[in-house]
Image 1 (cartoon, protein in one colour):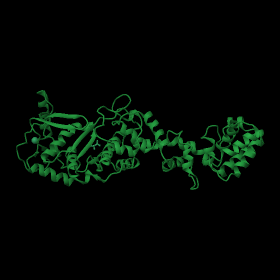
Image 2: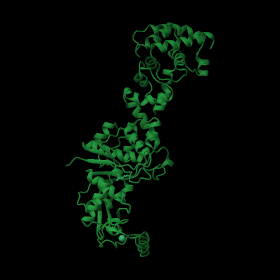
Image 3: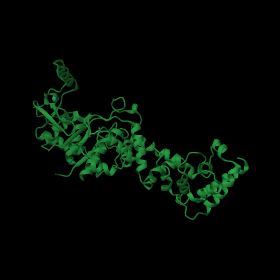
Image 4: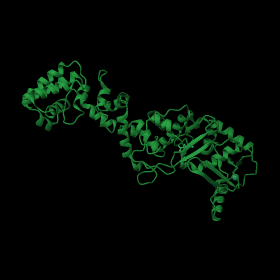
Length: 467
Ligand code: GLU
Ligand code: ZN
């Protein structure tokens, strides 16, 4: 079989929304699974509504999701000559014709069709006139008058369109620009696209595109129309349901791997598996398992999956994802900071990168902000008798590993008979300012000797001063 060639053709009239991202993903995963090609095409023929800003936003979102493309981005607005050539070809081979009917005439035809109980349609009156190109003429495709066009959909099964429902639709407007379906079909043909996965809001365009293929004697691609994503109230997902743009999820501290995992599962399944790495998705993705019923977007599921991905990720790999969130908090870690070690103390307890950045703040601060109540409760002059020798022992450690850090605490417990919790809690307040933190040993190891000792000595001074 020929190599699989898929495409993602967004219209740049806004940000990349989660539904569009899912379509991109399905096509990308399928191409990657099959060792094929994934093409990016910008459908900007609507010059009024298309903006460079949207193009940039879409490209950035795809890059963030790490959905890479093998060809493109191609811009439809730069391909008008190609469409013109094909339109001319269709007229020459008798599959399309010029029509000079006025808007009033068209309106009258539609009224007439409706008064006879039919759909509003063009009646084909220019079909056999064999007119030459004239200014302001449109070009229409000769649609078959009888029979049916059958779309063998990979997701939905056969979908049958009665040809009597189709009229001779316009493929070139009177200003010489191609219509949407013409441009899409010509692009897919000339780019060699053989597999098209897209939202089922496009089902009704498909027979028109198929007729263009037929008129040009081209082999049809394989189509799969995927049910639209729904909101919690089972209406089509929209802004009412919350954050819709991929960028918003990046800003809320989601990992791209979690977002793609979640989006793929909204319409595709593999047994009852919920968690997939990117690699696994590429290995396992197939068209057979795309569901026939619509997925419901549930931001809480996405959040919990994000937590799972944060937990499962290599802490080192999380560093570049976390840094922007630290920077937003005004923290620019020095190169000597052991960020993977810091992340390791937080990755079991953070659902988002924002949470993780907030949890990490105390590692970097020069000035600890103490929680008043905690200080009242845990800082006492008597504790200095434990804290000072403990700090000395910690300072003397050569090996500052989590394991070895247990020893100074054990020694102090043995020497004084004070229980671990009673020692650890004031230490925790001294190091973090509060009573909630990662595990004490892993936290101290990640904080490093210099900061640990400095903070413990500072707390000691406070204790002596009487808070
Ligand atoms: N440009 C269309 C859209 O953004 C996609 C067309 C297609 O997949 O054929 O909805
Ligand atoms: Zn006409």
